[in-house]
Image (cartoon, rainbow, N blue to C red):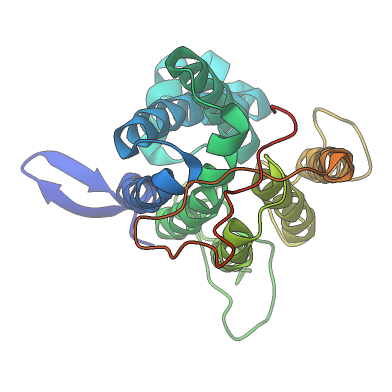
Length: 280
C-alpha cells in the first residue's frame, strides 16, 4: 500500500485525496464539455460540481461515523478524512442534496443536471476506489486467488490481513463498466432523469454483489439488523427505487429537448427536437 504518495516539506500528500481530486477534475471536465447538450453553461456545471463534492465529502464522512461509533469518542479524528473512512451512500446523499440546492439557487433543471452528472459520478468513483486501494482501506475478505493482496489490518495495529480480495480494484472496474454503459444513453435519452436512474440501479446491483467479498466497516448489519449487510440492504432499496422511478417516467413518454453540440449536424428533416411534455 502507499497511503502517502510523497511529502512537500513537512506536509504529506495522501493517495486517497489525490485520486479523489483526479476523479473530480476528470468527471467535472467531462460534464462541462457536454454541458451545452443539456442547455447548461460549463461554468455553472463546475459550480454544481464543486458544491456537490463538498456535500459528498461531508455526507460520506457522516455516513462512515454512523457505522463507526468509536469516532464519537475521538471527535478530532472525524476530520481526518485523508486517513480514509468515507461511506459512499452518505457521500451520494450529501452530494445530491448539495447539487439540488445549487441547481435550485441557479434556476437549473435538476433532472437534466442529474443525467449530465451520472457518467461523471461513475468516472469519479473509479478513481476514488483506486485511491482506496492505495490507502489500504475497503479491502475484501480472505481468499487464495493469485491476485490476493495483504492489507493493513484495521483491527490489529501494525498487522496485516491474510491474503485477501482487492475489493477496491473490483469496485474500480465496476465503476469503469458503469461509465461505459451510461455513455451511449446520452444520445438516446427519452426522458429526464433516465441516465441517473440507470446509474443508481446499476450501482445498487454492483454494490450488493461486491459486499459478498467485502470486509471491514461495511460488512455488518449494525443499523438494519438484517441477515444481509447494511450496505446490501441499502443497495437493494436503491435499485428498487431507481427501477420504479425509471418505469414511471418511461411510461409517461414524451421526448426531451437536448441542446445539440456546435459541431452536430441538423436533422435531415429540419425539425426541431421534441419538446418535453412535463418538467421533472
